[in-house]
Image (cartoon, rainbow, N blue to C red; front, side):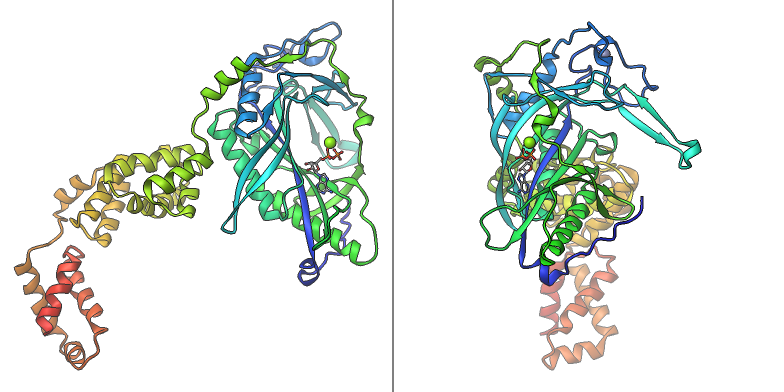
Length: 492
Ligand code: ADP
Ligand code: ZN
Ligand code: MG
């Protein structure tokens, strides 16, 4: 396929327009077995081995709804603040595709599982609620694998292992106004689904997939423009890049007096462009009808409330609590709740240190930095939460300086030993012996007569240099507050 090299609007023109975006997100539910049969959902099995007559759509085979999948879908809907319907209905969505042996997907149409929810996002320092139109359940199709480039040597293989894997589709209202907001929304959805353990959201395995609907309108306009739908956005980076491209393409067309064609477009990560794939299909193209092989899905109040009661603290609730209980800044609370592992680590460390803000700084700075440098995740950290808490406690009690703490942290990281063990082994205790410090100060002053003179002639800024010299002479072990005090006294 050749590049279309569409004209893109420059920034000053873009600034006169506003984007309107709604996302349709598919999340693979983390059940062990498929949604209508007992086949395993495991990833990476040899092609066409995790299949049976039901998920292959063989004539006469009947589906049986997986109770666990429904529970997970309800849990997701509740976490998205949706209203769960007491009775919803499964529906056939008919279309032909080589990786869809049944000839239809079992989905939900006009009576979806849940509706009317919202997700809170945090962009550029402000909070915003994004409406969730609906959450419905459906089964996944198989996978087509394309191989070869020459016409004479091109094959497509079909692997049906994924057929019948349980999905939920989460449809947002057209409430997003920029690619940054879309990125933040998808981030929050992923975090939520992981927190409540209904999905791993592993994008590389296709557990989280996203289609973006986007239109543009002049700033201040009330009505929406014609939208296009962009498919194949299998990473956060691609979502943002595809939206930015598509917005600039649409604005350029409108600026030139053209009209947007409502169509489905495909994002090409190699060129960074979107390309027309097919004209849009409408609901009536799918000939939806109620699934005759399955009963209506009834969710009693009692069942729904049982699921709600199992809900863990959600990321937004945790963020609010971190600000309230620990006095953290909003931004820090946001970072520390980016995963359950991270927030648990922080809370365990803060419980030991008794200094939540100091702990937040150490977790977000030194700990995350060291983990990132080695490509490690929180559970693999050689420094445990309790050990980090102990280190922070030593700093906040004034037993060691921040500088010395960094040295000790590096050693804890390398050996897995506690701060105390390292300090004892290496004699790294903070020096708070005034007589000893005074002796070192005298040596430093004797070695720096020029600086002493300029301090006494009024250049008080030199004090920092002299403090630094004393700290250096003690390998950072002198108590900095005491050094300051004694130096001032000595200098008169
Ligand atoms: P369709 O009939 O094309 O399926 P829907 O109304 O069902 O359209 O919406 C599908 C998705 O597109 C939703 O996420 C919705 O928020 C979004 N959407 C609807 N209209 C627009 C628009 N004008 N611009 C951008 N997104 C839109
Ligand atoms: Zn099966
Ligand atoms: Mg629709």
